[in-house]
Length: 107
Image (cartoon, rainbow, N blue to C red):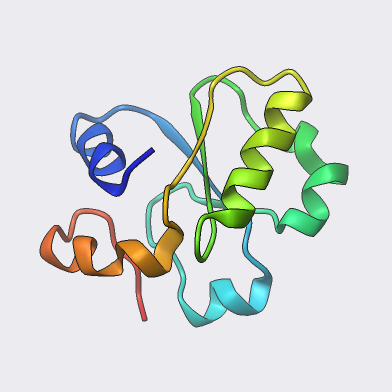
């Protein structure tokens, strides 16, 4: 899922379950400020995936998109159907969001 798609869906008040799979140190250094974002690192996700709410589209987010992709694949392998990942992750999308401040990332 592209940053633009995420932004449009949030602006349309669509419920998205934003799952940040970065390590705690990364989240603290550059947190997402989207209300309701849940942080479960990729390393913990295998043991904690059942904590995830499945009543809306799950969007996995990481720094570059690689761990987000891995997390989305793992969740789909567990039977969750509505899963996507943020393409390019946070680092690639920072420039986009600076122009479109609805989706906040603090640096």
